[in-house]
Image (tube, rainbow, N blue to C red; front, side, top):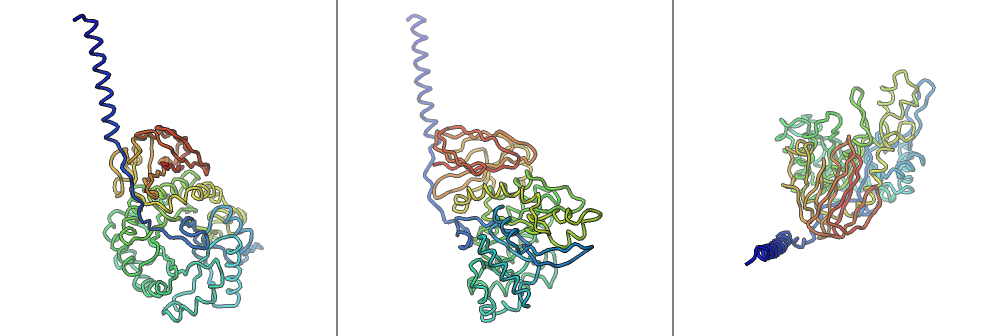
Amino acid sequence: MSKFIVKILALCMAIVLCFCGCSLSKEEVKIEPMEPEKVNTFSFDFIGGTDVMPIGGFHGPGPEVWSRNGNTKPSTITDEVFSAFAECGINYLTYQEWSQVGTAKAEQYTDKLFKLGEKYGIACTIALGTAPIADVKTADESIKPYKKYKSFAAIHVMDEPSGPNYFVAPEREIAVTCEPYFKVLNELGYFGYCNLFPIYDFKQKQAYEEYLERYLSLCHPKVLMYDHYVFEQRNYATYFYNMSAIRSAAERYDIPWWQFIQAWTNTGYENVNEFEMAWNINTSLAYGAKGIQYFLAVQNTADVLVNHGGKDLSEAANRVGIVGAFGKKTRFWYYAKPVNDQIKAVDHVLMNSVNKGVLTNGSLGKAYLANAEHVIDGQSWRELKDFDGETMIGCFNYNGKSAFYVVNNSFEYAQKINLEFHDTYKLSVIQQTKESLVETDKLMLDMKAGEGVLVVIE
């Protein structure tokens, strides 16, 4: 047999083997159908129900409270402020600094608060104090006057109660300040608002997890929420551990969890910029949060008085909060709006999805998530074969379809992040509120620092 014929036969055999190998490879990555799962979610009917993610603001509008050096701090219970909240995407106010009930003046403020909430589509919480909700009959009578307002959504119970071994303060302990009132509100079917402490020190892990369990087992809230301000101490590993502990605790009780977002900075700490705020929100969404809250919604009185120094008071009155003490938009308003707009574009998916875990790539993610659960091994989940960059990806079961919330895990640098899929798929991609429909096996996302993009396998 000639050498030429031998070479031809060898080439043909190589082609056949390659074809067979490729066929086997495709069979090995066959994606099995995924059944829809029950989703633990919560939202208020007034803002659109469980398709709409609550975007809350803690410490909301208040009345005129002081005058200093000829400057009066005006009321922020105004059309201007509520319009600013609605434009920014805030749809829920969780707490007001002032006493809402008990005097004729306070009742006037309350009436205006709820009516403005109705006008601008913003749900509101009322603080009655503990005596009016101490038993079912008293609570039912105390709450009855506020049921006429469509925007009435919740009863404030407590902010940051203590545990027996965590932030110990007997007068603020969960069994004293929360349990009896949640029992009453749960029986009556009302949403009781309570937010828990964070953890910043790994040495307190056991005490913290006991604290979470005590609250959930005694109070049975509809949502688990907490306030870890990551840029106060910039301990990112603790931030992700805290999220992991909260998520695990919420999953044990089949309830969703909400994340607090930092819209303030202490004197002596670095300022939070727009990319850091976006990263804070988007990493929470990728990890499975079903709601967010900003602290502060409206700048608190103490801040504007303490920190104005030699500056003009009007300048100091725009230092923190989504809205400043004089009712004007702050830099945080402008930071929050584009991310809130993105949430509104993707929440119909995230609110109806079960988070199956997160994928991470790059040195930042490996360090950040070293102490967290819910991390999927490797670089692949279902249709997604591989990806690059400093990236975090939340993996979701969206009514039986795979969904990915892709986050630029750097809040310093923009990136081009490449996603590689096992096959060619039809994809829905929502970035900066715009939806694109593409059919491909490779997708390149040009992402700003801290940005989040939703990809759904159609």
